[in-house]
Length: 177
Image (cartoon, rainbow, N blue to C red):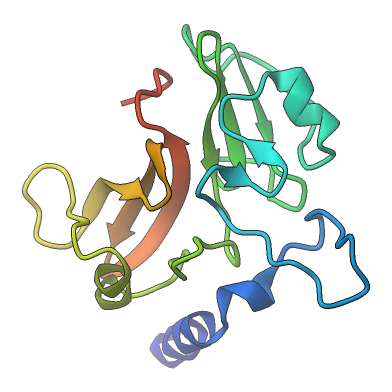
């Protein structure tokens, strides 16, 4: 089992993020190579932080917005191609801020190459200022400014020395934490 996990982690790290473009991402508008869809700096492809649920649905990149995600976040949805359970690929819509957070899933990363499964060392190379909340040395959740978007942050969680969760969110989101 340890060997399997090691091989899997090496494969995840070795795959360039651009090669992991989700099948449900937006179609390329040119006949040249497809444009890689990443998480950030303003959202996910045509899906932008701040959009209303209806605007987000119109991109064709998400499931039908549904349910209540809490008192301030009235609705949630999932990126097409995500598991549609838990937080992987989940979107949070704030009643006040619109699309407040977009959670990634395996194979989806930032323009700087950070993705779920990446080692803490590689994360720290891409974002040297990232540190977990609460004083832990490496494990935990933390935020780092999104290069190119001063209104957003990446929320990155590390456990066991690996990135286990990745989201781009409005800096002042009011949905959780």
